[in-house]
Image (cartoon, rainbow, N blue to C red):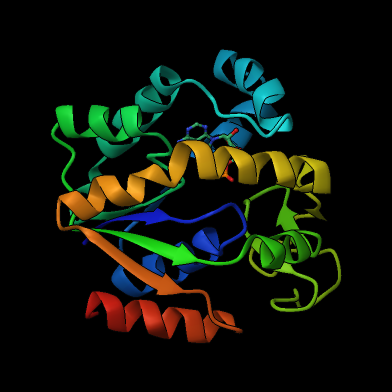
Length: 210
Ligand code: AMP
């Protein structure tokens, strides 16, 4: 299964990607997580990306395509992959096609902007492994501590309300047109966000027939 996850920031792409990854035994490639790791490590890519991410803007397509091609070349992608947060623009999708990156489906998780703003305020992210939690909908077993690696849970800087607004604007302008792009290729599958993580996973499984 080679899957692209589309949807606004906070739609639950990362959460669903992790669940599907575990179930299908294929890796999730999150350009956001790779960029945040680059920032932590202080690499050249990280330095370039930091200000853009903090402002809710997109990182340039060339940098992103470099990250994607390097990651997809690794052995663990041979049986399939889930792309979370990439492509984010039509030029990225076109570049992926030109590179011969094949996909079986582009799954869009549909959710209202108001729900996102409310949801992002409760999101907590592990500083160490990037796993996400939600104080109400998906709480960690112990406050402030990651269930998976014991790392410290923090609020992502770009989850601040003003930045969330900027990221939503960026999403509608730059990323939403990808739905028509994949629809034209017969690959688009849309599901509505559900009240719980489990229910959303269930509608995704049924929409993808897995
Ligand atoms: P995410 O974790 O997917 O919400 O990504 C966080 C931030 O990283 C985004 O707001 C962008 O600034 C940047 N980013 C992640 N993926 C991409 C991409 N495919 N293209 C451009 N910027 C990206």
